Structure formats: structure tokens, C-alpha cells
Amino acid sequence: MRASLVPAMAFASLLLAGCAGTPNDPTLTLQTSKSPEEYTHCVVPKLQHEALNPTVSQTQRSYRIVVPSKVAADNVMETYKASNGGKVFLYERKLLASTFVPSSFERAAQECL
Image (spheres, helix red, strand yellow):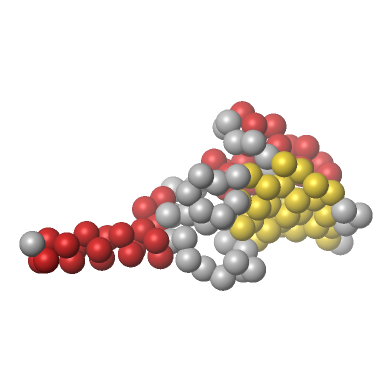
């Protein structure tokens, strides 16, 4: 009985390992020629189309889009002014099993570059 429990525990720990990570390190960094405002106006409708419920906040130099996650910490996209457009940081916690295919969150970010 214990022998069958070992593979299940190993699989569970691998799935949870995908959720672990340094919370301050972005999972993806992108460069865009669009301003933070233009980029945000492109991304938000795409996220809404995917039935994600983004919340947008704004500062003088940046926009922050937060999408609640049912599995892990909220997904966050931050867009900052750069000399030639904007710089985009994605903070996304994915299960290990889903790291091979881009999420709808990541696809929306890539499509708006």
C-alpha cells in the first residue's frame, strides 16, 4: 500500500513545484513599441474575451493588470514607460503540467506587442 503512495506523492510535488517560485521575479519580460496606455487598451479586451476578469490600476508611469487565479496567486501584468515604447512584465503562477503551452494570459500579452 505504501509503494503505491510514493508515485502519487512524487506527482503531487511536481505539480506544486510549478506554483513555487520567487514572487518578485517576472515569468516573462517583453518589449513593445506601444505606450503603456496603448498596450493596456489592447490587452484588456483580449483578457475579457477569454472570460478572465482583469482589474486595471494606473500610476504616472505604468499600468497594472491583475487577473484573479483559482489555483495560485493572482496573475499580474505590469507595463512601464520605456524610451522607445513600453516594457511589459508578466507574473504568472502556472501548474507544471501547463507550462508547455502558453496560457491565455500570456497569449494576450504576446498578441498586443
